[in-house]
Amino acid sequence: MDSQINEYCSDGLHEECGVFGAYDLNGEDVAGTIYYGLFALQHRGQESCGIAVSDTEGPKGKVLSSKGMGLVNEVFDAESLQKLNGNIGVGHVRYSTAGASNSQNVQPLVLNYVKGILMLAHNGNLVNALELRKELEYTGAIFQTTIDSEVIAYLIARERLNTGTVEAAVKNAMMKLKGAYSLVISSPRKLIGARDPFGFRPLVIGKRENTYMLASETCALNAVGAEFVRDVKPGEIVMLDKAGISSDESLCTENPRRCIFEYIYFARPDSYVDGVSVYNSRIMAGKILAQMHPAEADIVVGVPDSGNAAAMGFALQANIPYGVGFVKNSYVGRTFIKPRQSARESSVNIKLNALKEVVQGKRVVMVDDSIVRGTTSGHIVQMLRDAGATEVHVRISSPPFLFPCYFGTDVPSCEQLIAHDHTIEQICELIGADSLGYLDGKRLPELIGGDMGYCDACFSGKYPVEPPEEDIRGEFDE
Image (cartoon, rainbow, N blue to C red):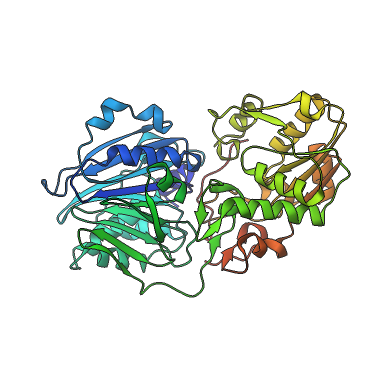
């Protein structure tokens, strides 16, 4: 493999992000709306963010954009938003794996080409990105980033030269893409949303008065006072313009594979993903844990934030009091999605603090959403013991991670997954717990009200799309 591709691989393609788009048919600026939408999606990525806007009545090639490293409220202020004049635009919050956290990879991407402009924000991960990238490079494409989102943008731009509409170009590009992608795209006169045929990542349509919106989650629509219209179907392309909402469902399949981890961890609890309440999913996970792995205990606590609802479900099912066992510093990013192991470990203590008044002298059931490497779980168990807990029984609202994910969830390679080469008993000992219980993978359908078609490859190894021969998602530094 040549040096360019080696650099590309080390920089990584893998990401878990949030996207938001808005089109005000009355001609009012949308930057403020996009800002608050991204703010509500901040949990999906804390490393960088950006907004790009255009005026549908102005010059076709004029785009105003602002992007930067950091949180939404760090990158943007009132002055910068006021300069983003335009009634159509897209926004993005991003998380990347090790090596790819830099300003050149911040989205949205903006392409100026012969047909005008293209603004694109992408959530997901392609498994054939290297193959497509090489093909494009040999036909003259010059890449400015190391993310697979740029591959998608170039494909759409190239297809647009041979099609009559942007949505037709998107469709042609989708036929070449393999993997996970929820896209929000703005052309000079249209806002377009597209979701891969498996529907790995969520995408919803909203409306507030005469403004159409696309967002990763319904919580973003709530944040801007928009009405939820519906989910974008897996494989569907939706067009939002002055004529209203139109769509192309020709790529839709009857075999969706929505990411089950959206319900367990990624999505905000106040969101609905494909019609299913994330909060209710987590309550159900906790109830199942209590049925399968009961514990003699005095109190049940959740590891904030995604463990809280599951802990409540456990407490309800087991008839054990639920307590707030941790105080969380909300201004620290999620440790699970810190690129470096050293950053993950150092942020545990500043992110969480056990409430001594709640756990001292008590047998505690601690509910968390997952165990990846085990290091963070060990720190949290010890934190409870230091606060005076006499016993700590750990319950995990997902099955053990046994395989990497190639579709946009930050599950690393097998050798870095503690469950891949350790038994549950060994993991229990390594994290210092008195007992350990995981959710049974066979009961995952109960979280979403039946088998609506989901992907659990990180637990089962059954990939809906053949994984790449080489893992190009970036290495995780210890």
